[in-house]
Structure formats: C-alpha cells, structure tokens
Amino acid sequence: MKNLTFVVVDDAIFMRTLLKRMIEEVENYKVIGEGANGFEAIEQAKLNQPDVMTLDITMPEMDGIHAVKEILKVSPNTRIIMVSAMGQQTMVIEAIKLGAKDFVVKPFEKSRVLQAIRNVLSI
Image 1: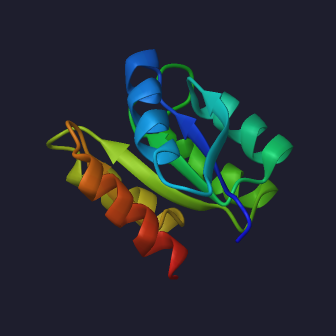
Image 2: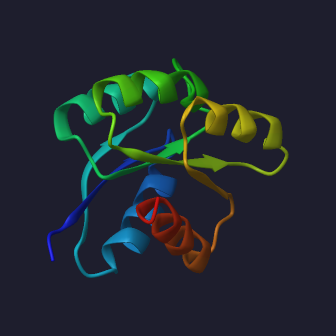
C-alpha cells in the first residue's frame, strides 16, 4: 500500500509535534510538511499535494477558514480536517461549507484524530 501523505498546520509547534506523532504511529502515514498559518498551509498544499491536511482554525496572519478555499484551489484532492478549540462550532461549520471534510476539537485524543482521518479517506 502506498504511503498516505499529510501536512500539519497549527501556529503552536507543540500541537504540530503532537499531531505529527499521532499520525506517524500508523503504518503508511507520513507527514511531509508543516505550517504555522494559512499562507504556509496554501504553500504546503501547492508544493506537496497531500492526501490529508490538518488545519487549525485560529492562526495569525491567515486563519484556517480563509485558507480552506485557497488550499482546495491549488490541491483539489486534499482532504482537510479542521482543528478547533472548544466553542468554535460556528467556524467549524463555515469551514465544512467551504470544503473541509471533518474536524477534531482540542484537546484531542489520538482515537478521535485517527477516526477523523479514516472518515475523510472514505469520502
């Protein structure tokens, strides 16, 4: 089976590291890029065409909501999983309307992250 590729985007390096570890514990899952804001997310999508991207909602410079549409323009097959804090349901719904496929809420559990990945891969 071919490797599934991931890009992890969050302004907190701790969160990127945590997600990267969770993802790469699964055989054939490989994180090939990271970003700290929406602009970097778009650049990573253009450069790497990942299968899946985790995208934080709240980031400096450009948030995840504004990045979703642009990411899908440059990498239409990338499935986006939004990462949100508690109380951001309205923004999650907005992101899903724009093309995101699922979401996880911080603080997240590994089982929920992996379930979200399975959900978007089956779409």
